[in-house]
Image 1 (spheres, helix red, strand yellow):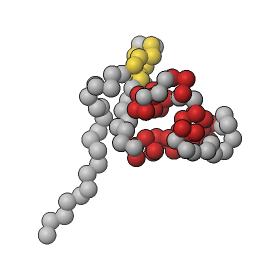
Image 2 (cartoon, rainbow, N blue to C red):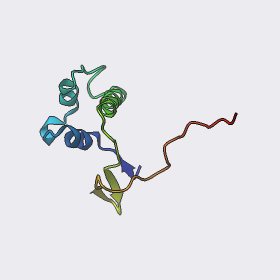
Image 3 (tube, rainbow, N blue to C red):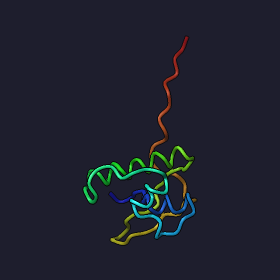
Image 4 (tube, rainbow, N blue to C red):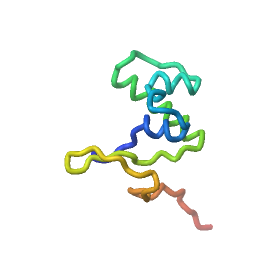
Length: 96
């Protein structure tokens, strides 16, 4: 992966909280959720991160790529940069 969404950065920017409030357990707690599973389990951490992302989307956040790797260097992507990738799927239109 050369581009990704850093959920901690997105969470901090969207909810206007400092970086020390973006630990996984703190994010869940602030959203009124409990941690599901075993701490530091890759699968369980991923599921909990997905729960946070879903909640952020429900709250109106537009999740966008905010970090990338370029020439071996970690770079922040501006939130005002144009969206990349394929357009959102459209519902098929039926002719009568």
